[in-house]
Length: 310
Image (tube, rainbow, N blue to C red; front, top):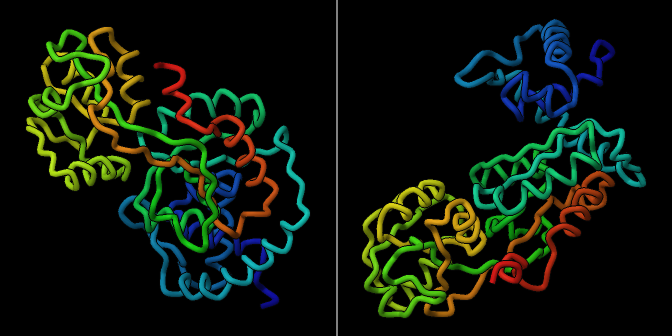
C-alpha cells in the first residue's frame, strides 16, 4: 500500500467508466497526456496493463476490475463527505457540464441553455449526450452526466430526484398548402390523411401511440422512420402529416414557410418534462447550481411554447 499513489485512484475509475483515455481526461478536467502518464505509473505499480486497446477505446483487465471494485465505494463515501458544505464558483469552474437529452430535447433546451451558460461558466464546455436507459442510470450515479432533461420514465426510481419543468403536448406538422390544413384538424381529416410516423428511442412518442391504441384509432401509415429531422423535407414535398411534440411542430414551421402547425382533433393529454439527478448529488453545490439555472430558464405552469406561438 505504501507504493500506491491514492491520487491516481480517480483516474482508474474514470478510465473504467469512460473506456477511453481522452474521455477520461475530459471528465476529470485534465489533459490527455496527464492521464496517459498516470496510467503508465499505475501499470508499473501493479505490474499489469490494467487497460488494453479494444474496439472504440480501451477495456479493463481482471486486475483493473478488482481495483475498481475495491476502491469505488470508499472513494464515493469520501467524495460525498467532502461535498458537504462545498462552495461553487461558476466563473472559475473548468469542468464540463453534461446533459442527457433526446434530439427533441436539444431543440427545446440547448440553444437557450448554451446562451446563458456561456456567460455564467465561461471556462466550462457544455456537452449533450444520448444513451440507453441503463447506461444513463450509471452515468448519473457516477457523475459522468450532471442532469437528464426531458422525458425519462426509466429514472422514476428511489436513487433519483426529479423536478417538473413544464408540460408538453402533441400537434401535427403539415404542408402549408395541404388541402386539409386547418388550425385544428377534424377527426375525419386526421383519419383520412396519410401519416409519417417516428419510431424513435425517445419515450414521449409512446404516449401518443398508447392513446391511439386505447381509443382504437387506426391511421394510414405511409412512412415510418427513426428520425425526426427527416420530417420537414418529407412533409414539405407531400401530403403526409406527422404528429410530434408541439414545440417540434413549431420549430419545423419556423424552418420553412412550406410547413404549418395543426392541432389534433382530440385531447391526448400531455407529458411532463423534468430534470433528473442522482440522489448522491442532491446536496452537491455544483449540481444544485446548475439545477437552479435550468429551473429558472424553463419552469412554467404550462407549455410556454404553446403560450408563445398560439
